[in-house]
Length: 158
Image (cartoon, rainbow, N blue to C red; front, side, top):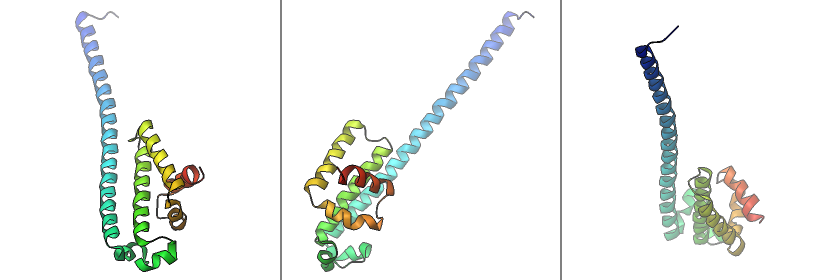
């Protein structure tokens, strides 16, 4: 069977249209995945801003801490070995670390940015008092289990 010029052109045109559709679907799928990741990141950033504001309120007035912890501000030294303001600030730092960890898991932070965060976290836990707070609150499961495993495995033991 011999194809004429018009049949060959028609077949070539059909193959070109199908190829264009396949490429369009491929790039559309990638674009939708990127939008999904951007939306997740925006939601996490929005939650982080809300937590940041809550922590500012608690540090300004430690008496409101009982709303989220059930412990009166004047009981913190007995319960946790730190003042209410130190506890609020420790939670803020821990939440910031958890947020950085989540952004790394979502591949928002590149290797250089993550290396900086990792070193900063290690310094906080080695040189600061945040490890004392971590050991008190970590068993309560207030953070993502993957983050808890990361802190216990990579930061606290290091």
